[in-house]
Image 1: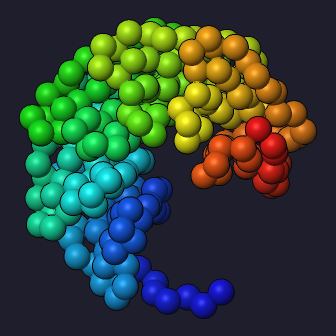
Image 2: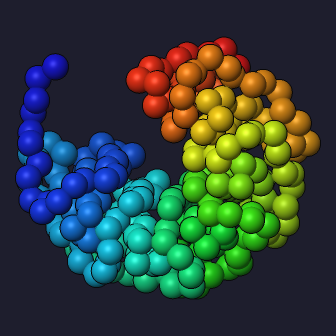
Length: 250
């Protein structure tokens, strides 16, 4: 319970944060339109990532910890060199605010979900858009790669989830059954299931290939904003506006 460091420097609320996979650096994104890279051991600020013109609401490190991705309400995402703090690419093309971002495991691709109802797949080396995943009729609120990177899941305020083939962009399956917007999605480690968290007070577990609903997790008394599988994929945790977390067997 001991506090090692207090990271000071942002001017307004911090919206998102993460460790790199090596646990040597921390990234923070803020409503002050900046992201910062910090040394996890000393708590010292290493870089301020400048360039966005609106709040940063999503950020990630790649697998190797040498690149970071930020998503902003200015309709763009940016790729950054962690060692220098330099912007490598600005990913432009969305027509609305960015809601979520993620690298694949190999770090050659990244994805961005947007309020413009689409998800875009980007080449991290060139910064070019590989393709745009369409189909949702309302805002895309979260996106995710499977562990192997061969599949992409998107969820939306339209209460549906889609799974796509990463290399072709073809839709593999569509999941419908929630009665409210879906704000969070995650693959199980095996890449055979996704879990979705909804404002309808439930989470659902789906078969990735068929789109069949395998489980509906009922018990929360308010919106569910977060959900996750454990490392083995046999246990699920959900977090709700009802001030509780629940643990479930998958």
